[in-house]
Image (cartoon, rainbow, N blue to C red; front, side, top):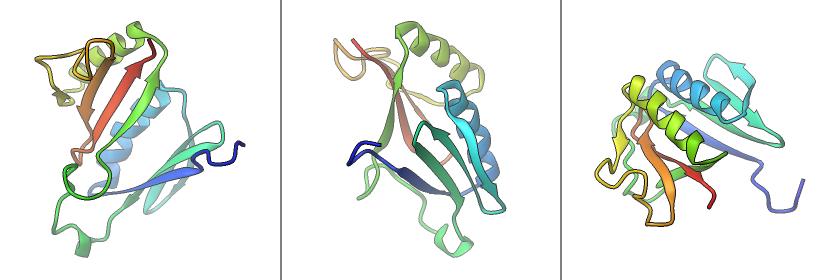
Length: 132
């Protein structure tokens, strides 16, 4: 693995079951495979990197996540193509996933940026972008 490459990302979530249903479908559609699973978490792996979802303890659920606070704003993933973005956009709509910036979709990131932006169950913003 290349020095400096992401080893893993760990996200604490408010409802593990809801989050793993959402993220499992999405990550598997992007080529990830289920990696580890235990009573308080689950992970998916792509090559040498993986993403972990852990159930937050009840005592830390009093302040919900908001992407404009200090911390993670969003996660962005590569799509295979514009068609891949379009296909996943339709699947997200079928699953009633909130699509962001619908008035500017699929160019919400700029004229030369083809992407879909949406939210996970905790309202973490996710981006799927096609390379130009």
